[in-house]
Amino acid sequence: MNEMNPKLKPFAVCKWFLENPASELNTRDLCNKFYIRSRRCVGAHFRRILDLGYISSRLENKRAIYFAGPNIAEFGSILSGAVKPPKKDCGGVRCLEDIRERCVIDSETDCWNWALGMSGCRTPTVYSPKSEKIEQAPRMAWLFRGNEIPEGHRVWRTCLNHKCCNPEHLACGTQADMGRWQKQTGVQKGIPSKVAANVRMGKLRRKVSDEGIAEICSSSETLDVLAKRFGVSTYAVSMYRRRLRGTVPLMRGASVFGWRPA
Ligand SMILES: [Zn+2]
Image (cartoon, rainbow, N blue to C red; front, side, top):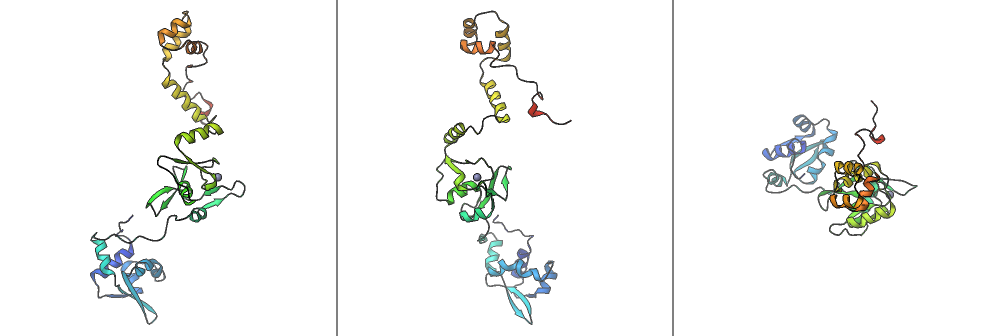
């Protein structure tokens, strides 16, 4: 981000003035020389390099004349890499109001629905000039409200709206705190993808393989004998035999959730 892009016109103009310090160009020359679309956009286009003093301008016969500014040497050191270009004092969020301005506020739920970019379509993200990084907008909102996020803590939305950045709808805690909150509120219950994941995890943790379960079901041995043989409790063997646990999974595509039109 700090690197200057040589394709940018202000860059090319400064470079030209650096190489020809005694030259002067009027607005029309500038447009022709650097392929700038209109004379009107020169001022807007170059406001920043004018402010920084890399080039200067004066009016002559109602026409702007451009020439190398007092700080053109500094621009030379930026080109050689000795000095970093000055940071812009715009862009990103600096206070809670900056975040609020970037949201559409839902009058019913009071949710601040983030209106800009999202990371992975799930998390509002925004540039933070303080850390000079892209940050999660809800975390920034939490910090701007005067709270802290200790090391290893997470911020989550209690309103379950993944676009929401309202600090009143946020909570902060460890991963375990978040898990406890999810358990209490039951927000993760009954979600098909979570149910499927739990079944997969249960299968991975199971001590007895599918073949073992088939053997338990067909065997006429007692629960105690089978439990000892497979190294599990008699309760588990009973559950397998009654097909209440460890049943053979559905065929791929058999689930109604996986159905797609042909
Ligand atoms: Zn909300």
